[in-house]
Structures are given as structure tokens and as C-alpha cells.
Image (tube, rainbow, N blue to C red):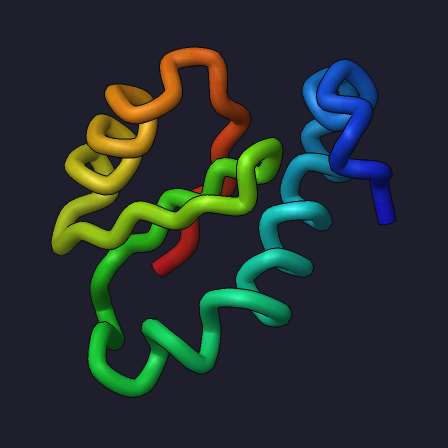
Amino acid sequence: MPNLTMPNEIFADPTKLAEAGEKLYHEKFKHQYEPDHKGEFLAIDVIRGVATLAKEPEEALGQAQAANPNGLFHLLR
């Protein structure tokens, strides 16, 4: 698992970015979003550990990027 304090390593390797996003999802967000938001999209900022929920993927990612233009995001449905 990548060290989230080293964003350059995550940015350089899409697999590490996806792993970091999946880990955050399972540890922090799954229990919160999955029961009531099936079919919706979650953009996870893997650097800050923040998630943005929306009905469309473009909306989730757009809102997440507006909140942190320099973020690195993992998008889930």
C-alpha cells in the first residue's frame, strides 16, 4: 500500500492511486455510502481522504476537483 504522504509516488503509478482509493473506500466510506447510495458515484481524493458523492461520474469528479484542483481522485460506482 502506498504511503499517502508521498503523492508523487501515487501520481506516477495509476495502480498505486487505485489501490489507495480502494483502501480508503473500504476503510472509511463503504459503510457510510453503500447502503443508501447504490448506483451513485464517489470521487475519493486519495491525498486528503475526502469523498464526493453524486448521481453522475462527471458531477462527482467535477465537485471534487472544484474543492481541490490539485487532488488525485479515484472514482467508484
